[in-house]
Image (cartoon, rainbow, N blue to C red; front, side):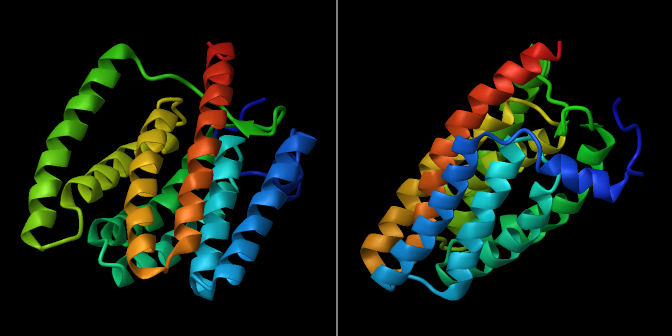
Length: 238
């Protein structure tokens, strides 16, 4: 049975969010969260807000990868804190992305995921884009990248080409996420790769934001894993 509206038994919803987790996934979640806290504290390379941002970001990614609508609750906290950290590091594209786009999109996401939630599986229903939609999406991304790079260059932002690439790809990936599309994970993998490069440079220059860097490294490997899972699930749903 599939939910056709957002009216849902919240007790059953909470129970379903805890279903279908493998022991290895739970162990990974615990190990990753523990590693972020321990490494950050030992290196003294971040603030409490940085640690919380990284931890909630990891929880968002893991829950989204499992098709759990509760991911957006963690996304609200992560979007606010990561925007603050980006502003302090002069990554203005990421700042605007998180505060002006990600934050409101968390509420849009949970609404649409609850409308397309399969309580029997305890997960959102996954799907593929058509080839025509993929072509349109790619053209829009390239056009937006050029325009955003020019704008960030005008405001003297750090690494405008890379910053604009992560900004535009993230906007597209979030739209695909709300639409429950497999292709979001291709976009997220590109975003994660570029972000690792950007934050590693910031860490080498200042010694700060180690939690943000660790978060993006974790996102990269989790994204690859969940791309495989969503590809399989979306194909089974045809």
